[in-house]
Image (cartoon, rainbow, N blue to C red):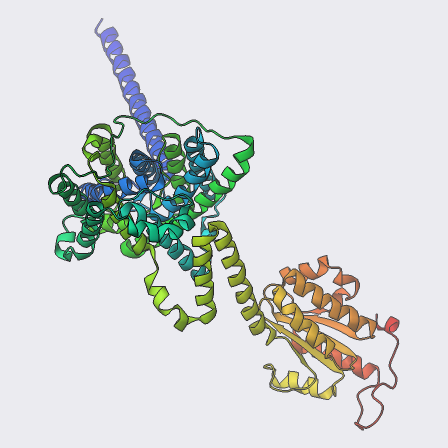
Length: 612
């Protein structure tokens, strides 16, 4: 009986051990699974960590305080209303922080994005008063989708490959537009029709009809922002101080005076804006969406570079574009303004101690609380105060550093910058960037071509045009000018084709052409065709053609052009000395090398068919 009990206890203990082992294995597997899931989630989201929670929370609160007046000002300036600015600040700020690639970046409606959005809202509402605003929000969605596509296909690194003169002129032009558009509300007048041109034409009339109380409030706002001591700026942003002081003054000093104010703002969650478009406007909306998305990419990635310099980290541009795209897509669905990386908010966020995306998420949640419960407090804010805030943003957007010294750095660069600025203000943003990039690239290609053209040389004797070894000089001298060394160096872009053709035309009568490509890492199509023409002409004249030092990539390009039909495989050599020796042997085989230099150099020349 005792044996049976002992046996049962042993079996029970064994089962318990197996059960514990199974539980441990299950727990371990679950832990590994959860860790893998967390790792995958972290790859999708931005860098979120809680080891600097105090700094991140403080940074988020400070950034929210900075963002509030700007969101209201940009919402009013765009024509979509102050609530659109708040929705944009919440949606873009939250999703860009959650899915972006720059942990400390603060994203919100910015001056450049607001300027473009203002034009889009004005054009679409003029053409379709009923659905124009909904169509404008659809353009914001298109911009978001465009940014997501750029991020997915990893094109972020190419976005900022734009000449600085073009970027400077473009951004300064946007700053001028924002300043011009704030003139009317700043002096207490409704915005004239016709956008920038309409406002410029109406400036004399606006100045004769100034509303003194509103103009005083606008001037007070600017004075506070400009003159506020730096010590106080560390504790509270001047925009918020100007907003509060301006509002209090308007309620106390100008009590009973007719002043234009924000008015009632809807409280609560936004109404979803479904994509709205008409067949006739679809093309225009797509172009506007691409333009808005591209501007957002440029604005964001430039701000991300600033964040990198302050934090000594490196952002992930493609991931950042995906985050920005998701934010703008959601913002469009919620009826919010488009946004991008904001320099002011980002710098404030970093300086207050933020190190991760927790700060950006915190800032968005604080603004969401304002939208849900405290939006009514913004109703008495005067429009002139918001105009003053937006006007200061426009002044800050101007690239004063480059504007002051552009003519000293480069006259051509200065002309491009001012040309892009004027085109941005008075013509069109896309035209300005397109024309600026085209002209800047043409000038750059011309300079590079001139430099590379100096590396295209035809040599018949051992001069100092290129560096030759003593043996190579000796071989070249012994050929008595019957061996031509056609030397190319550096990337052969299409601009060098003219120099190749010029040297080709200047070739002297000879028996051997050695094409030295040892220092050519890349061969463009146009330059390849120019080299092909030189080889064709040499073969037609009966010259033996040797190609030296062609890399596999360059050789593959030449083979695609059919050069192998003209130059046999044994004439592709890797060493210049060996090529010179073969060329000299070929000259000797034709009896050209003479002891008497006055004898006929062409005697004993064989027909081309006997060369192979």
